[in-house]
Length: 381
Image (cartoon, rainbow, N blue to C red; front, side, top):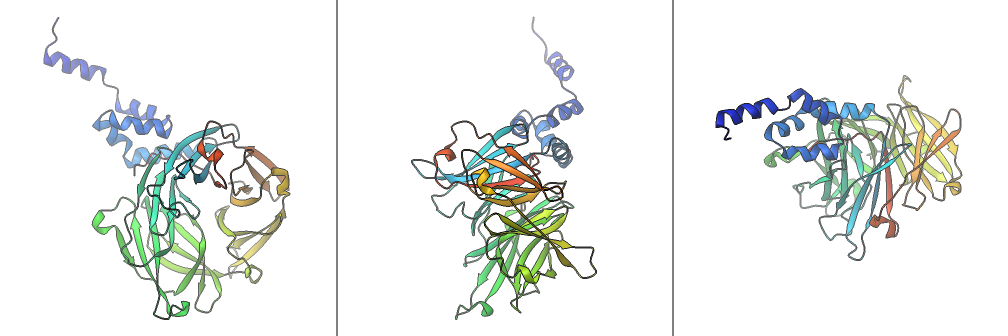
């Protein structure tokens, strides 16, 4: 029996899934599965890429069981091409998410530590930077910075008000004598998803400073980092991603003068904290005292016998309950994440089950990074 065109149309309308039900189903799926449904139809693609759906998906992901992201960076064999593996883990399970390969045969492509912001990761060093979504496996190479000089430093963060990701690049421009006091920086900002013509925008900075290292942290749309100003003193500085403004927060504590290069900045209960492993298994943490009339630092220190975990540990962040997150610097066959509670002096160990024939198992000195409170994102790049 032949069905007329009008009857076919009626059957199609009758069998169409209501949009509300489609959304309810998609919000319960993993991000990698949701990304596949972009090809179903134009209406599904519009739904998935809409701001409301993305916001709702990320909120639900954050409210589920706390998870953390493990990032392994190394080289494959026999080509020795650089790669980055992402795994999502919790106290009960570990899931392989995706793998990102370096788009160039360049030893510096994945050098430097990766940085996480609201579901996305910034990889690379200098002009060779990538942004990737570990949940979907997507990655893009950022456009070249408009400068003939080498980009020395870059910051990556997320503005929750305007829901924008931004990258700040600082390019050192040396005077003929090449001495630091006679050098200056150019500052350029790139907003992810911006038009190609307005890809990099030059901004001004009225506070002469030298960005000290690659350590920084983004909290509520503000990036904090340690810088050296004209007086050669170390200060905590901040860059507001929304207004693209700089400001000095406070000077560093006198007992922080010998930090060296091996220190990190973390978000500790919504406040900036500077952490360092001074010697052996002793960790020092300085938390900014925002309640004081003149902002200062509250110091915490503790010791953990790293040899019990077969690896040297470093502080990677903190949980919402105030536990410090410690993890190995490099991949090992027995990879564990340690949670230390400074109030009870208690330790919790979470084993990351690295299963399968992943190539980083056969590499040497594969770097490892752990990012706590990882939330799946379906943002397309």
